[in-house]
Image (cartoon, rainbow, N blue to C red; front, side):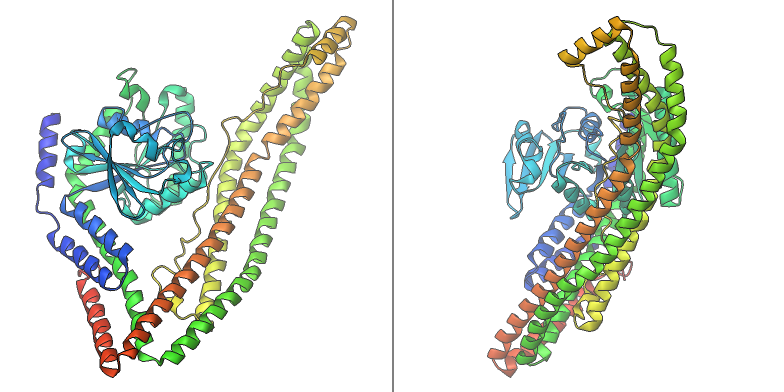
Length: 584
């Protein structure tokens, strides 16, 4: 049965490749070189290569420590990728078919270097390449796996929400290149905020999401069922469509060929069906998206080049000076937007402080009453043993009250964050529009300059793993004091400490969502400011290069200017004519 399926998959991928799409991409690479857009040219060539070979990318995305690398190892049948107890993957790593195991890395300058598979960790792991300090653009590992032989390339992405901020950015940057995604979630928390944001972005981009609930061996049936239900509800509400099957697996067990299979075989069949039924379509769609995106970038350069040729050099120089001045004004004007963002942060802070207070007001009397009843039923023991028993009672009661409230609060927190992020984006886009209307007209034609998704790029750190604090062991003096209290029967001091510990547990743990949302809002604000500055810098760079080319042409006289204008017109026509009808 497996051989039959593999043969059908190979036959499907043996269909003629998108020859016309490859031609268009290679043409864009040539046009990019002519316009000095080397990054566009390189990306076009890389995409043309994978379209020609019928390769499509299935990316594993999810919060750090979800077990993405282990899942990929299990899918290909051997431990190729490094795994560990700390956030591991630092750069996107593509696992693709090859007749024998080998690996190579690409640096940011575009150069490739072959390495031993055993040395892969030196370049892609956080331990040996913290926040990608070695400047690795990506890595490829070739494995003779039957699954990969069908054309599928599985991408190990850096974990979202990692303490290493560069990792999430690397994963976000890879989204335009993927064709389908394995969203790897867990039970604690089931679906973090940035995972949901990334799932939305991928769904809008390609629409092929496969949700995997990993590490099933570490949770009970009840916990997995609750996590799956929560994940399904959040995804369906966010994506506005059915979420499909959520596959419960343990990648670690499958890699070691032990334990129950759970949904593992169903997952493998789905991936094989994806190759057989949609593989070629995914490749074609990736080609179309790439042609559209790269063409837009080149057209923005062409328009700027033509306008620089058509106006006097002095006027262009004045425009560059005005642009520089406007950029400085924009930097100052951004402070006005900052005040609006700060007001939104204060609103959120007040909202969650009130929710926090409301929870404590309604919960604390009940929890304390339950604590006193439980303490009265606790057998008396020596002072230190009695303290441990009382503190354990406080922990159990706090957990019983906090956990259900936090589950609801997490959903509210996510909703409030996303609404705030949308308002931030709207404010940022209004700011850019005003700049375009007041003198920086180039902003209006920059590809995705006013993309409403700009700014949805913040970390989510719902820290629910260590939900309830653990009482620290008593110090020798504390132990002696408790022992004396036990001898004289003065256990009220210990009970008072236990009540205060209960209050502290409730106070600290019920403010986790509040702290997380406010932290993410602050990060969202900072990232939006960075996006705006990056966009303004790109506008300035293109304008300055266009002026330099125009100055060079005008120095050669009218004939040189006319030749440069004809060249720009020709390039624009070639770019526009290179777009396929299914894109235009």
